[in-house]
Image (cartoon, rainbow, N blue to C red; front, side, top):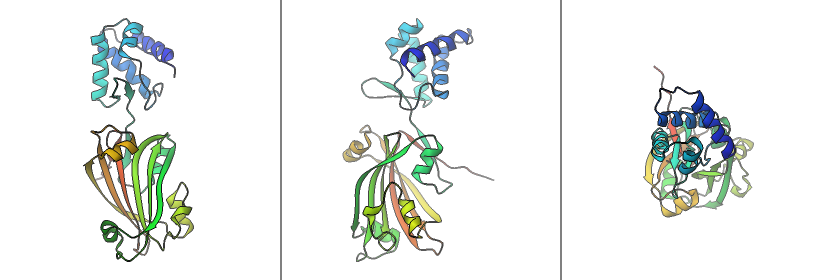
Length: 249
């Protein structure tokens, strides 16, 4: 939505609002409604403080307080260079075994990937332990950047015994499609999660601030007969990704 239309929407929302509310609160509610109604989409840059002041005939103090409140609530994020954008935070359920693409499409986002490498190699010590193989075995290792609406979200490294994926270079957009075609689709998984600082190289690949934390998820996937088919480590941007667990009594 163009900036002029956003400003018109905000002026109308404020005019129809409760005049007893403080001015900063009315601006805050107008911006929040523009976000919730998708007039301002994820990652969109909101009008500058100066533009909002002029369009709404309000002081810089009023506008800034409204924006700061929405930042604290997680709806807005101030980028380097003073641009303020609509937060792109995404949620991932830990209670179901879904692919990245399924997660993104369920949120109305277009999943994508940027391949870094597809290779056959010897396993690292961590891959040996996770897959239950020896150092003399071969693995297929796939490394890529996962994106949502072209925004880098995570770095994913998948390792599989080569008997399940003898030609990693043949994998297209979906690893699970390749596994399903070979009758090696996993049916259950075990995951663990931890937080780690981002490295300069990871910050470059993810186009993330240098002080971003990464949420690291390690997943071991199993076939029906108990064989370990996949070990994947995914490093998610902590500034845009949340993990959610639904609990039942």
